[in-house]
Length: 266
Image (cartoon, rainbow, N blue to C red; front, top):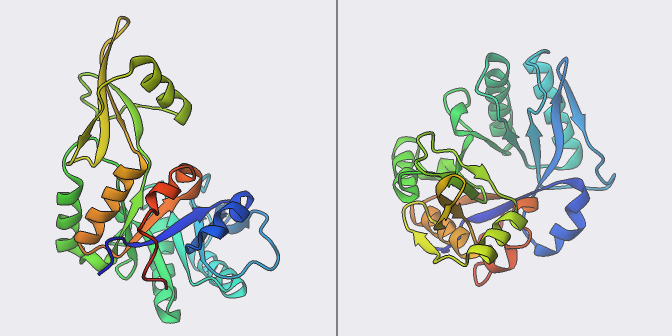
């Protein structure tokens, strides 16, 4: 058994040329649900074929006929030779989105395609794969994956790798920190030169520091090594697929893929 899940990269059209040479399956971040139930598409190369469609709900108002939307998605996938759809839904499973997720799941199953939906849509799309975020501010990633695997079956899960970089004011009762850009994280590490530790439960690196203005801080962040460990934990729990957003991890991919290239291509 491979020590790594099959990796899928979600890629915007403008970064296709950089992502293609990696040789990983690609999911195209070029589609979103428009007002009135229209499928909107960003510019894609006319001859692009294969991969997955990434379908965003950014700005979707819940209008339109989910059945009509499903037909548009299926038609576009067929025309492009896509082998499935990844529903990048950030809204909760409101009726229109829940209905669409269910229709897409059934349509994909009939055609032998893959359909991935957020974990919150598990009940709306019983046949779909479930995207489980790797980002935690508490608890254990290993335990979470194993518990979800027992509930849904590990092969139904897909680890959605989110690159963590957050600064928490302590105490942090909400479990939410201030997101840090790559440059901001690098600046804190350079200025503070802290002792950096690794949390096996959160599967991420961390350090603490004191600020004269607002006291104690806890910074949680990922590296190539911590993401590799997340992937290893997922595979050990029986999870066969992981999704990484190329714009988030492009600088880390050489380290993530070190001795861990996809050995189970689809």
